[in-house]
Image (cartoon, rainbow, N blue to C red; front, side, top):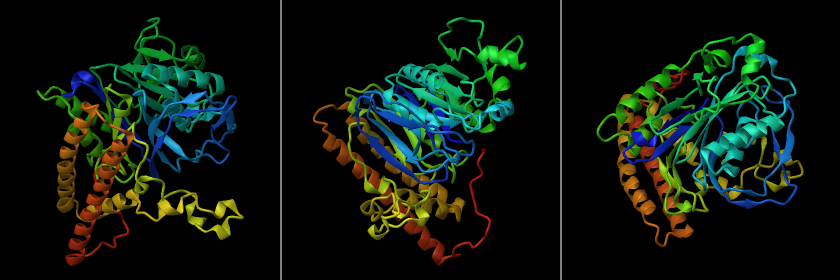
Length: 466
């Protein structure tokens, strides 16, 4: 399902907007920095879904552009049969941030989706926008043009948040194979949470309204189906699940609006809390991401805060566009990677490509940040009252110092080579991982010396709203 949160710049203590969230999938997740690439003329990329997907379709090839932008993203290995590697978004060198969030279409649209659907899937849209867009507005244009020309492969309805330093857009793509979509602009005074993504009333009688965009066939299609005749056009009621804002969305939007009215407004610690709170974040969260939507002195200083799993059990660390490396511990490992259970890291098996592991042996010989953080998460759940607050205090204590260090780096543009950014980020990512390992060791020791581990079949969890 995933979770996205946008906070406009007028509501923050730093004077810039934020885009944050997490991916909500069970499979493996890994951090990637994709360099700027020049592509050969005539190069094509494969997009779409296969006949093995939950809502089947056919893969197609579409032209690649001549140059793609450098970007940071988190990839993962499975969701409803969509071909891997998959991504929910990230941040590119021009300051465009992307979050992908589920948004269910009405049942009739799902039923009319062609069984051999073709076109871009949700991950294709997120990745291509990171590769090509220089603004949030351009991201909507890129996505809508590609959908119109090549179609869209749906799993039942989806949405994206596209954001830059000036504005953000929520764009919903509907099931049905008709190329239906709607986009709403989010301005400097906006708090918007998506889970699922939603858009309510749009002004269909206002031509060229700068705050709303939608496919040309949208209104006519709804009239022809008998879903709309006159009056207000509420997108969620007509084309969505008719539920409006879900309970969790209402809760976090209200919390952030209250914070924005305080004298200090919303700061980074507050945004991290909104992604970390156990009311919203649990075992399903595959990672955490917080993007400051800033325009620094150099594009290399654009950055995001990354946590290897849901931030309820993993600390945030900085990752910069200007760096070229990430620690091996944060790369793809075999833990929870779909398809790895029958593969070997053994050259004797290479005659059958499906038995050779997709993970580099050198990387697999390091510890997995995702595994280590998941272990801490399950240790916390053995006694939430005793362990959780202590863990969060340890994370926040570290992050307070790290936020100050990172802020100084962003404000200083002297002698910041890629090596210095690499060294700083790699060190801090590994220090965060070391903290996780030490906390796990301490909790494990306590449990073994007291009540020992629970063998209960029913797993424990936080009391989440969604």
